[in-house]
Length: 290
Length: 316
Image (cartoon, rainbow over all chains, first blue to last red; front, side, top):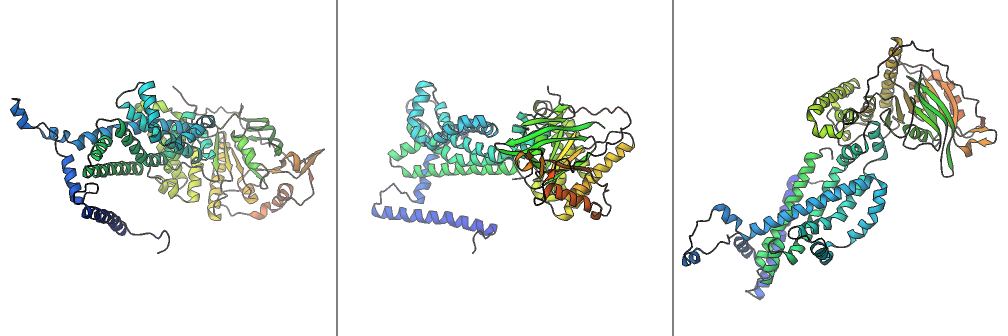
């Protein structure tokens, strides 16, 4: 088969399923080996135990009715909503999604505006490009302590703003740089000049020419930042939170309930994949020309 | 006839590289002028100066009575590489200019009762123009799905819908095959015919065009007048090789009509003369004024008052 030879859709799907199957087989083999050495080992649970862990994470964490009766309290039959919202998985996932959404939203907004203007105005690029290049080299997780001091002590922000700031600040340098490069290089001088000859103002050139032209690149750049954003969030939750995916992973790891940890990792992976796919669909819908 | 474009004592240089030297010419309303010259002689530099993207180091350029300070809606531009926005369909591309010119971002975002009827009108105008250019099948196509010739026709329609005071064409057909190029040249001649029809009924000719090309046949075929730029000159102690290119040729071109058989024999002699004056490097250096012959002034048009539609933006 020659390089870049096309394959049919059926073949592509079949090969994708084969890849997932191979992963499961390799994991099952390693798990089997580990358990044959020590049958009580929980570090590499088998697929059945992972299933049980998922069931446990989805079990409503409600007060024991017998205890309530013993204390003479009225026992209410929990509603479906109550049952769902009281599961660990729901509580952790909902708060993590909320933090991720707000963090990405603010990070993307600042990055898009700054990157767009940097690409359009050379003097802005001259001011911000060197410091952004420097900041992009420092992993946001390594800056966690600095963030905490900055956010909690100096800015005196409390609660959810810490996570929003962590994600936003984490994705900002890289995202801004990629949007800046797209705005600078993806539009020819000729296209800008032509916009002026069509009667555009500076704002219209940015909003009606540069932004729509680089929108697919912006969406792709955001897609690539979903993974890092999850890293920053889980790292922050791991250290600070009382609820959330990162917090639960830390707690379950301490108790060596690795089945639940693996479940949470799978859920995080699916969450990232769904966000990724949503952005691809959005790009196809908004930019059919790309 | 009033002059639409006035270029006076224009000099342009970049560091030690003197590109243009003492360029002077005017283009009256309704004239089609071809600007020719050898590679790197400064044709595109002059065009950029007229467009306003690279202002000259010395000299003045006026469009109408206003000095050029930057690209604006009075000047239309068509590039060799089309310069079409990838995210718009053909009809949206042509309607893009009126949209930007006649409305503001605020009106488009917050005044739908004002913007929607206008949008319909712009799209309708764009469709009519594209159908006139035989692009009815391309209305909802993105540029990537169009052929080179179709893209260039869309680019010309995009510029023409603005009714610019002058239309600049920068090597517009350079990347096209021979058949498509001839088709588009005839399209330009059709515009020239519109000028003649307007003159016949005593109206002002609507289109003034400056086309930069290295194809001499094309220059003689589509233009009323050919201006040749070259470095092959001397004027006292000044030498073109050092001081930059200047106008070495400025003569009317033979009249050609769209659809008629192309008679290249008609301008063979002029073409050879022009080539010697501005393009060939191996001919003796010529006196600067030798080949410059101002085109005969056209008779004054009848005095009529034309109310031109005001397309200046009503910014709120």
